[in-house]
Each structure stands twice: as C-alpha cells, then as structure tokens.
Length: 103
Image 1: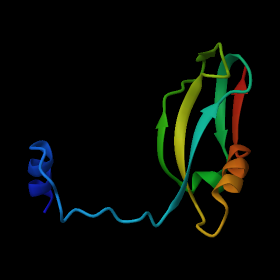
Image 2: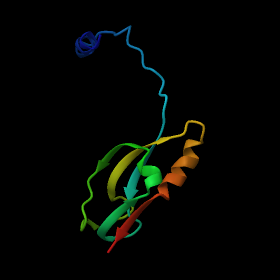
Image 3: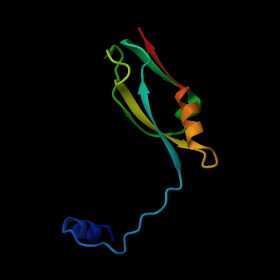
Image 4: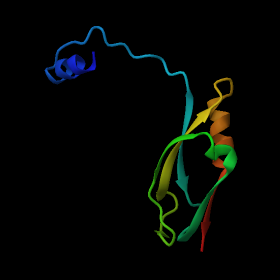
C-alpha cells in the first residue's frame, strides 16, 4: 500500500506493515579514478565486469583534466557479485578490470 506509506511517512506516523527485505544480491560499489594527473584519454571497462554492472553514474569526458588523482572521481559503478564469493576479494579483483588512460 505504497500511497498510504508515503502519506503516513510524511505525517511522521508509524508504518507497522512496512518491512524491509534482506538483499538477495551482493554488490560492490567502485569509484573509477585515475592513478596519475593529466588529461583523460579514455576509460576501459573489461567485458567481464561490464556485464555485471547494474547501475552507473558516469561524468567523465575525454579531455577532462585530472589534477588530483587521490580525490578526483570519474564515475561510480555498482557491480553485482556472486553471493558465494567474498565481497572484499571481489572488490580487489574488480578494481583490476578498469583502466583509466591519461594523455
């Protein structure tokens, strides 16, 4: 009963029948960043990870200037992982499947 939940929430009332389901998907959130300063030539995303990206926020453009590679984010992707695998291990593997090329 979504409309009633919205009204009750906006009014500050309790919503006793609203239950959050446990996630059935393991996700890794990965920030796409350059390893060095310079002009962005492009970003390569390996097909092995591309097929598992379920959402992305990309704002880079070829030619963008990266002045501080420690903080300059080019985009964020959300990658679906196999639930049977260790998510920390998967995150380390996934980071190797992105390459940021600089001029």
